[in-house]
Image (cartoon, rainbow, N blue to C red; front, top):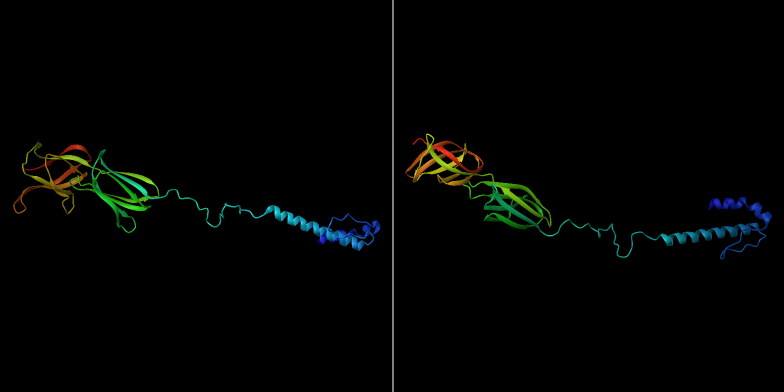
Length: 256
């Protein structure tokens, strides 16, 4: 506005000499044509009117962005992203050893406080419907003479997710055969108890001889025994090596 007034004052001598000014739009004050001050005032009034009209037109055309009907307000949380999945997670567990399905026990626990969530016994396939979270899963194979256990830690399940876990127990399928001087020897009525080398407790006390059984691979020590607890004959076996794999014979050296 200061620039406009300055320009008009500079033009005052020319307006005085010419005795005329620009034609006024409707609504502006009509100049007398002879008074230069009056002409200047009229031009100022006209300029102010034009500026007000332009400002009103600009305001009406721009409006306020982001307020379309039904568009929602992105800043209020109305348009939250949808989660990747909804509903419970589906967990399937399959128990196997050496490519075969085997029955096992399953216990599903909360990974945080360890309390039991779900589980089952003596099945080779399980299906569980669980809420999203992190779980710990214990599995036990009763079909092996040492009843081995496996634990899956940090099993994460997302809402609506379908997860399958195949659990393979490392196993040996063996036949314990007593031998003397390299020759198999029948020991009727004798049984075998075994434990991992250096362990305190027996892993099992009822292993049949000359029959195939499942047992976890490892280095064992054992004892052949016969009779009742009160009157029992025993033969100590210092070392029994069991290797992972299907159907093999494990010799047990006995002195008689």
